[in-house]
Every structure is written in structure tokens, then in C-alpha cells.
Length: 481
Image (cartoon, rainbow, N blue to C red; front, side, top):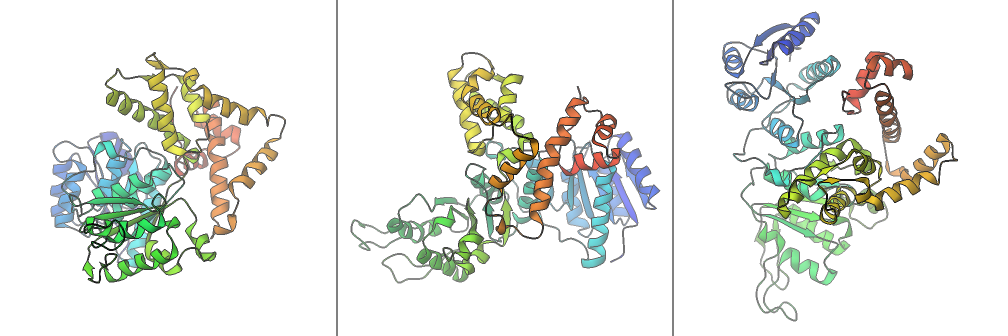
């Protein structure tokens, strides 16, 4: 397939059209401009473009509606969606409806350059990227949304949007409290199985002797106390999605039976001999390193590869601290609404405590902390004192190490975080560590320079363009004092 030559830009903001037009023409591309969705649709119908870039919110026809019409009429056209509102809902909807990529305003032109390069390479090497059909009529419910605008979470949203419409098995990995079930529900509610059952089972919470009948069901008289036929989770989830939480704790003999269900698409109830067909999509989750359990012969290798078709890795909350203020506001609004009390706010000092805490229990612990503060505080403005327990922990972690050098602190933290590092492959350690050191460093210097990129680049001793690129790559949210 030929490289990109002709591009359509659609945005109701004249300044955005002008900037993108100048940038693309400077690189030798032919560029057409549309001021709204209707004009863009007419131009797409009358012309052949290699790439279309348009805003998600435009008068007349929105970006998502335009994307739907493009998918109906010109499936081969690659589309990049722009939006000023970074949210899971926008990201999932854009990717699910067939967008090639999704970018958040404001963005550097380096981002556009990277997309052009990726699109060109895809067209030259493998043809166009496969576009997903829009199969849903309903959106994922807001109350079950995943919260976070960090770079790592935006990648999660993109993956959900790409895999939701298919029936591939998904393996969600992450620490306890990171929101693995929310991801599973997002996959289900953005799939063609919407309206069908979503059934969840925690493989670690049910005793071994009961887990088999819970999964596969049982016939009357199959065991003592079995007085009637019982449908298992697989049958309950027929035509829908079955979420197998903490699958790493499943006994080996049951793993073999799960593998058989995945292969044969049928189950046999305990005490029965009839093979019952089931049409179930599997989303599994674990807070363990399954590949390590495979090496230790505690988890079946064949089942691991059956489950790990599309992995989604959720990082700990301490690794995406920029999402904490957004999560705090979300939980405050939801909890106060549930309690039917006036909306409470978080003071700057309280927010500083929340952002400094390490959150070993992740998002679940943050939610509980907010709920506790809302219940116990009689003030509408929550103070640092309302989170005194967290402040003590954070302070204790810091004060005990004040005499240590930065290198010693980093060394101690690395040894703690990278225990079992042999599980990582292909240079993951180097990239991961650099990102986690660079992100707080650059954010700190930007704060000290009141978000002046020229001054910050000078202090850091790097080129301003390099700094801008790092800000984008690391997902650092720019602020204005």
C-alpha cells in the first residue's frame, strides 16, 4: 500500500486547522480542511484520503457520528480522533468504533509526527490497520466507569476499545484494588454481549470442594446436601461473559477442566454425564505473576497461554499518582450523592497528603479513605487532619530516611520494587525505572518554575523540544498558575 499523501483535517477551531495544515504541508502532504462534521463527510464522500484527523466535538455531526459514517462508506480510511476531554468513555468509544488512534488536546506536533510515522509504516508493511465495526447501541454506564487520564490508563482504554468487539480471551493483571473487575465489566459492556449476563466468581474466595460445582453446576444427589439441580457459573453466563477473578489460586485439577471448557465449549455438571454447550467469553484476572507460577508447576502452561491472548496490565496507584486528584473528586461526588449529603471538597493540604501516600491497597484503599473522611468529618472542606492516619504513614516513611542520600533511597526502593525481576523481559526494567524516575523529576522542576518549559529545560540541561517530548511520553499534565 502506498504511503500517506493526502490528509483531511476537520475541526471547528480555526487555529487548530491552521496549525495542523501548516505542519502537514511543511512535510509535503496535501491537506484539505473542513470546519465541521457535515463538510468533512461531504469531502470524504467526494475524495480519497489516506488519513483523516478530526475533533470529537463538532457542530452538526460529532466526531464519533462521523466516524460511524466513515466506517459504513469508506472502511479503508484511517482516522485519528482529537479531543480536549480525556476520559475512558471517549477513548473506548473512539477505538471501538474503528479509530486508528486517539490523542488529547493540547498536544505537541511530535505526537502527530509519531502517528504519521506509525500509519505510514503500517500501510507499507501490513496494509491498513483492521477496523473494528461498531456493534453497540449503548455506552458503558458512567457509574461503572474507570477513572484516570494518565498515559498508562489511556493505553488501557485503547486496548479495551480494540478487543471489546471480538470474543478473544482477556487476562487482566494487577495488584489487589487496581480495578481488574471494572476492566472486565468494561470489556463486557462495550462488546456485542451487552444485555447478556456478566457473571463473576472469585476463585480464591470459594473452598476447593465447592468451587467445581460453582463453576460447572451439579445434578440432584451429586453430593450430600445436593437436593436439586444447580446451574454453574458457565451456564449462568451463557451468551455473556464469565469473569474468573484470582484465577492464579485455582487448583491444578480444576485448571484442567477450565482448559477443556475453553477448548470444547461445553461443560459437564458434577454428578452428571451430559455435555452441555456453552457460549461464554472469558475474562480472567490475577494479582500474581502467572508465568512464575507456570515455572513453579503451580499453574498449567497450556491454560496460561489460552488465557493470555490479550493481556491488560493495570499499574499500581502509586505509579500513576497524577490520577489521584481525579479519583478523589470522583469518589467525593459519588459517595456524597449516595449518602444524600452536600458535596464535600478536598483542601490543598489534604490533597497533598493523598498524593504523597503510597496506597498499598490501591484505588480500593483510596475509596475507603475518602468514604471514612466524608462520614467522620462535619465540615464541607476536608482537611489534612481528616486523613491523619495516612499523613502519619507518609511522614513516617520519609522521616526515617532523611539522613540517607538520594542514591541510597533509590537503591532501597529499587530493590524492594524489583524483587523477582527475572520475570521481566525485553528491556522492560530499564524503561520502567527511567520513566518512574524521570516523571517526578520533571514534574518537580516544572512546578518550581511555575510550569515555564523554557526555564525548566534550562535547569534540567536539556533541549526544550526534548522536554516537551518527555512531558507527552510520560503523561505529565501541564498546569498554569
